[in-house]
Image (cartoon, rainbow, N blue to C red):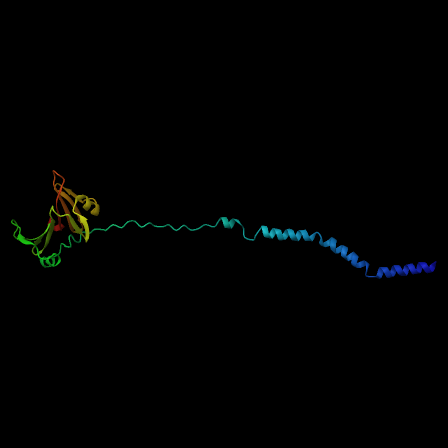
Length: 204
């Protein structure tokens, strides 16, 4: 009987010292320790995907600079009355003849002998002491050149080009640009344009 007890104790001790039990215990403890951590890790990973490091609000706050587009207005010539029909108020007889050719007729003013008149078709140029005193476009003129720009010889066309007159007199409309003047002589009764004069302000 004692032999059986001793053998049983020995077997129990051998079994206790054996490595077969410890792996099972270790396996069980590993499973119970790690099983709660897996869902937590997955939840953390999911959280990182749903909530990026950059706040979504910064996307909605992005604005695009609106650069104003300037529409270029239609450019209109700015008339300074430097020339009318190619003639300036500082031309002399020779320069006028070079520009326009030989006049059809050269006459003198019946009242002022010092005034010499070069007569061209629909235009006369009056000289005083050899320098242009004024240019006259007669009633038959259809067009005129103001600073090289062709304009109809009418009240409306000239007003459209030069704007409202600077002076309104009993016999016409006066446009002033510095020392140069352009006057539309208008019939008081009919309101019809009779002639156009281009002259220096000091010759008035």
